Length: 444
Image 1 (spheres, one colour):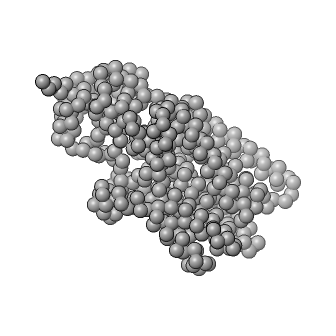
Image 2: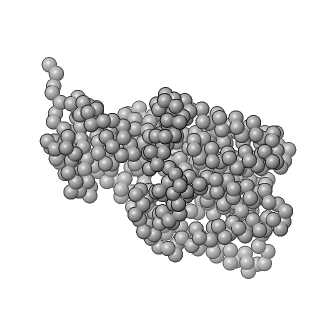
Image 3: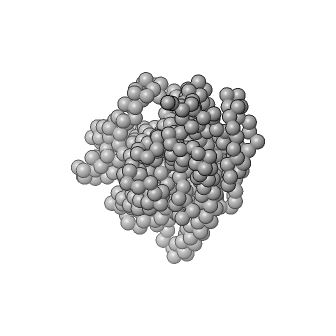
């Protein structure tokens, strides 16, 4: 997608900066996992080009889409597998996520592949299926550790009743994938419990939050709704979301009648489990959060469509699918343009800081500091909010040693400790201001 080719979004800069040899790593908060940083590391080590990174991720995600759904071909057949992949790939959030350095799409691929290999392990005689299952669960845990736990829960429960020989592979794959996350928990936070506590605080105190309304409001964008004050844009383009549980229920009814319950019920159960933290435990939303659920539910829905025998039914289904793809392309065009505009504002702000003389080593703080600092080649630091990484005293100490800028939004005053800093408007931004700290004293 050309509008996204030359600038990275907020979360993307956090993941990509971890192993970028040219800039300081951005603060890596407790809820994050390092899989997407590992995936992008070879690209960013070779070249700073965002375009090359986008092309590489597009090719890799396309291959992963094929590989993940291909696992299901022996389980549900070629037509159902192909249609499920089409339904999932046709979603605007799937297409915009393909070239982005974000983990949720990769969790979706891991969940689809792991569930398929699990079914092949418990229902067939494929010795290697267990090893593939373990590998898929491990890779999923690298991309998002908590999601891998939710993925494993229904698989473990099914294994206890259907085939306990898969249990060691499930648990072993989960443990292998979580090893890096657990080690980091002890190194950076003191323990797993402490990391979970910090993660909960970062996410806004996870607990019982009925989040269906926010998920509905953000269905057609924005990419992140936090705090979620957005109103639903183009409700007519979201009818598929309301129809999805009805179609899944109809697929389950067909499966009961045909006595092939497990291949239909299991992906639905895994989809439900992966949706729990995003629909019931947080109070904000983003369309990408439910990508794993959409990918898994595409399989029973596709199975329902391919069971239609009358020609008129098939024609009607084809027309509805075509209309869905067109509507998703409409949303994609609008959201891509909006996202590109935001990313370009980050880059324009970074260009403005360079014009003011900010050069590495340097420091940027304030709202939107993370993506702007990355583009400017600076470190970033926050004294409050979800990305709290230092104290006011620590920030002032660093400001006395390296060129430092504090960013504020239009009409916003700087905090008390920066009232004597020098303000400079940042051009080609929506009224943002950079407050430059007094120049550090020069040594002899």
